[in-house]
Image 1 (cartoon, helix red, strand yellow):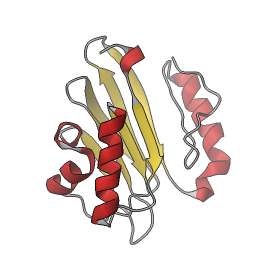
Image 2 (tube, rainbow, N blue to C red; image 1 turned 90 degrees about the vertical axis):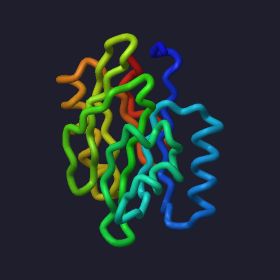
Image 3 (cartoon, rainbow, N blue to C red; image 1 turned 120 degrees about the horizontal axis):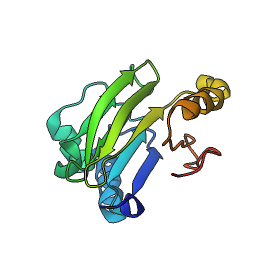
Image 4 (cartoon, one colour; image 1 turned 180 degrees about the vertical axis):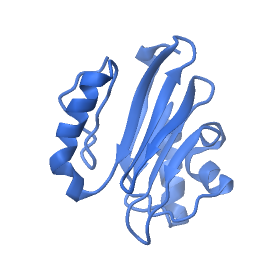
Length: 154
């Protein structure tokens, strides 16, 4: 897989406690051929392997990092194909999950962070800009809109 064929799906799913919604999310992930998935606001307090497989499928479920929700708020899931990527969890905070992602075929590494929470939006761009100065490869996504911050895809 080359960088040109890397498909990232970043989505505020607004809860995955309903089986019908989980099936819908999995169908979209499958139809999009996403190789990296980052889901925010999962509202899942406790993750199991069977739940991961139900949501992202067996291939992506083998290579995951997640932040459980606190009650009915938050929750993040990052998953990627272990056929193309290795993932090393870097940091988990109350509102974010960061991982170092390595593309196996091209030996390219970057950092991916999934974030949720309105209170973080004001300082988020500044923090990502500072991180961008330290990291040569960084893609940034806004929660809800799916649009990228003004840092370019590398």
